[in-house]
Image: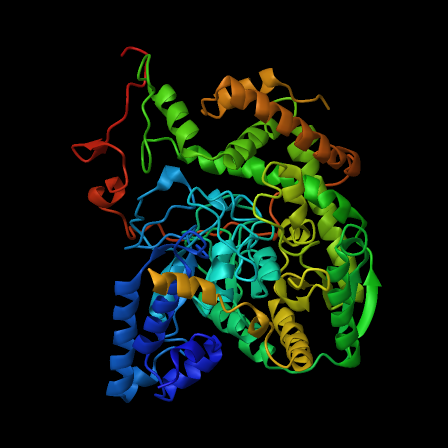
Length: 518
Length: 98
């Protein structure tokens, strides 16, 4: 048996090979991750990536896989390549048998009567679900500080944010509490946490992964996608969750491309990679810019052709996003009315009408950022302002799409830093919503246009030693290109570093010791 | 475009069914004014001849046979309800008669 400390550091692809070869059992792997969660996730200074740990069910699924493998024959042959490889699920995605909170008090203790399609697919692949990960309330935020259950801490520096909204999924993977996780990305909630935690995150083409069972924030922007430590691991997971679903009316009918093969292509020769003029330079931290330039240099040496493209309308993307997203969110969150599920709060005095119960319930159940976005969305949609705000934002959306279309006539893939800065300190931007929103400036255009994006580790910034993310963008339905270029860039960078970036992350020994001291 | 003030926020909070304290209204009005100001440029960018995009990937409607599929039992549908009675959601008074 492999040492558990080594075991949790293996990639999902390596784990899958060891499981198939019988070198390790899924119960051993799953238990090793549960032990790691117990060691580093809880306590005052713990990572706090998990809102719920699903030990019993995860171990049962692991034991089932081990039994099937041990028995051999057709059933063992038919096991999915990731069977027995554990995974964590963002707590915005509904699961039978585990609570789903969306990071909100309004859903505290709520159990979904059905599984999200992506969860059904994880179960069909027999992947043990380790638990549900922390997030900004209803996925609204860029730091996980808007979670009603306390912030997640960045494993690289426990006083810093892990990004958001999917900070829990990214931190869980970065802290070796899970090899894989599911995230959701409405304006960067998979990619930006990936960038600041030194992990990989992919927002697939809009509609290419079913959103059935993901609690909706902004329906025309939301997308579920993979979170992992390597590009290949994301491809393997994407392959499990992707493909058409008749229960999602926006699900694309297209068959899924072979993303794993794309990740194994191994060359970028002759590919045209476009630098987006508007998404680097001014406003980007020097260390971020330096690592971005390093990545360009490596791709050039590998035979890619680097071109510059201009997307002049991206300057309006953030504004359009902060009109469209709250508008859709204000409508989607109207269903939390204290009647059908979740919290009900009665007014302290006066008549007990349903209107007043709703007002009291939503006042107590929603946090500040959620209220802010609901009010902003209600404003943008109100009579007299609709054309000026929501209408104009939808026109900007067309302009952003046109910019992408033009860029993709001269480039096969676009590249930019994922986020303008490395991880900031917990509390640093909490009182300044606008500063918080600026984190998503480079990730939002992809959501507006529905195109896929991937963030991978680009190294550490010189000034603070924290991870920098590199973002790749491809035309809609061309997710395979992201995996091809991402895997090549990753292997070039790892050759330069002498191993994965996460090997340089703190071991979190002080958390383990604090736990053992108790 | 007009600036957003405290009275607007109070009105919007009523529309959105969120009770807000005086203090909350003050703070929210200040924050929203800054945010609304920052998104103003959106109106300048988009001329009248640009079509609006509501959905990133063009899709056409599809139909299926009208057959009974999976449905929840009443127990399942009510499992998360704050209050229920006789397999129904129990709600506070709809009209102000209590």
